[in-house]
Image 1 (cartoon, rainbow, N blue to C red):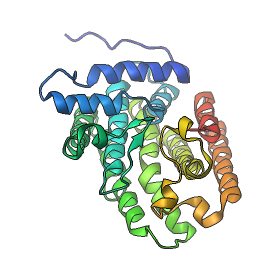
Image 2 (image 1 turned 135 degrees about the vertical axis):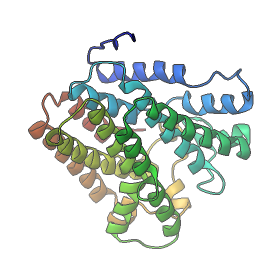
Image 3 (image 1 turned 90 degrees about the vertical axis):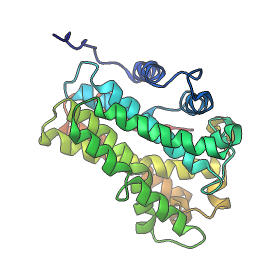
Length: 293
């Protein structure tokens, strides 16, 4: 007979981040295990910092919807691994060709392009292994749809195809909501689903995720123009250099700031109206709205 799941009380944002770090370390293979070069690259990419926004959102949704055991942690870690895999591949010379991430050399600069490619593939594989441990096919499907050709990959290729040409606002919104927003939306949905949320609760949580996902990427666009490199941990101006589709490129900086702020306010209003105990969601939304990295 299996032992009952250990009950865990709700945690604040900083505590959630600490918990995610602990579970990341637990689920990622040690760097001295064969193949060492691959596992070293994986640990370098994942454990080198980051906001852990997606797993924190999943944990917040899980707790808000009544979840209190450890079921959420493999899924939360899986979300961070998928995000990290996307960053590794995004940084490759065939994509954005970036040489700095989180204040450190990008994975392909430190380990070579082949190892970086394989590290991204391995993280993708491990993410689905962990998601499968939840024994909830629905959340596996949520993740697959969020990052597939109707999700993150659609946004990525649309972003590549848009380089060097003037886009409409609708085209930029498509890129942002797919390349970034779909995984953020899936993060809150996965947490809510694992907690057994009703449709009446899942719907506003999903809309909240959509709003903060788009706001997050608009702010990312703004920071690429006026952010501090030492704070960001990466080169600024890369969007302009690579002729990327951005909100400021279509609307200008001031209107982009206003658009991001409006999305944050709308997200807060949604959970304030339709979600019981929305405080953590509100804190996360304001954190996104005020971030500097």
